[in-house]
Every structure is written in structure tokens, then in C-alpha cells.
Image: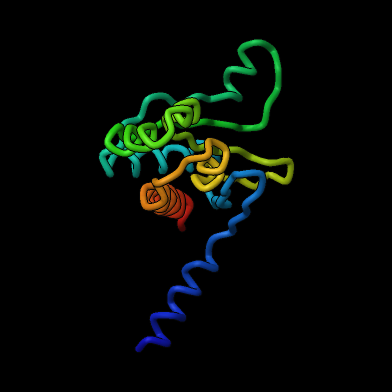
Length: 150
């Protein structure tokens, strides 16, 4: 039974294309930018998170006569989680609320990306909040995987 569960976890994990670089965690999506962003937004709302804004950078660029591949940013959070993090190190507020970016690259692949909480911990020299950082990492990962899942 343990082998079957382990195999299931491996196969489930393999269904996601993940890359991490420069403090970002990115998951490849099989949906368009708009659909991926819609999926993320709906899932986040269903989990009780507050959606503060959704920015369509492509639309804004077109409004001033410029071109940009599809790119959207969703700004969201939960003060019950963000506030304790700021209590650990107030400067992390510059990176809060949380954000996800959904974008299409030059190869027409769609990616959902967010700042790695461990990167934020290093960037702001946050001490004594490891469990909170782990919780945030887990939530971001679950939301992202759900948004890009087939």
C-alpha cells in the first residue's frame, strides 16, 4: 500500500512542470493566461482569501499603444497570516499582500509564478517565523497546483 501511495504522489507531482529561479516559483499551466488567472482567483476566493486587485498588464500596455504578451497579476492575501509575518519583520510589508503573476512566454507557454516565501525570508532577514513561512509556502503551492491542474 505504501508503494502505491508513493507512486501516486510521484505521478501527481510529475504532472506539474515547475521551475524556480531568482526567488520565483513557477508552474506551467495548460490553460490560457486568462483562464489560469480566473482559476486561481476562484480557488483563492473559495479558500477565504481576500482579492485586492487583478492587473491585466497586456490590456494596460495596449491602452498606451504598446504590445505585451498576456500578463496578469493577482494581488491577494489574508491579514491573519500577513500580519504575524510583518510582526516578525515589518519590512516584509513591501512584498505583501501576496501576488501571483500569470504570463505567456516567448514559446507560448503559460506560467503561474510567485515569490518564494523562503526568498522573502532571506531578503528581509526574517527570524523566528519558520513555521509561518512553511505554512505560506504550502498554501501558495497548493493554490498554484490547483489552478494549473488538468
